[in-house]
Length: 284
Image (tube, rainbow, N blue to C red):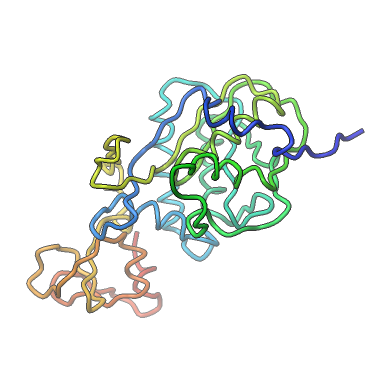
């Protein structure tokens, strides 16, 4: 007989989770600067989250997921994993295959020979993202965010055993990975959890006490559509930051994202040679 789903809020002690992180290891690939116009790694993280459904952003989103997947695998070194689990997005009740996080998890399963166990988790309802909820900021941020995550999260009872690679996109306080790691260990029998975040939110020019992180973007060279470009205040796309025609207030952007809503600069940006495809879809 199937056991009923377990509400995580009934199983967890939030105060204990504030004091102790159940993740055996936590790794972060780069920084996310929410108010920076010139942080390319922040734009990459935003581009990743924005590509939903993934079918509307191919082949670029597959390239971006592969880029991140390689960095994840490199960050965990020789560690072996039996399972891959990703944190559900705010708007998800069940894991949706159309989301970039799902595509990334599937790629990681293929690369590590692990199995995807994200379907253990579901929520009773979709909710607004953490960033729009005012009460989740301030001195009690971690406690409030933990309560936010557990409020409607459920686990389907199952004894996984083995080690889990836990994936999340942008971390603020690390509340999501703490909750999922707790549930995986206490409610699903996982022996070890390694959490990897694609980025962690940073403030105050890196003087927030959390350290400086720098994403390794060297692997982007093989995918020109994932390269850095600059958009000026006239919504003109430039491939050179020092282009003589740039208007003021340049903003860094990922090329395939910028090409959707901007006009290519006639001086520094190559024009497409066909009209059968939109400019932003034209090339990898």
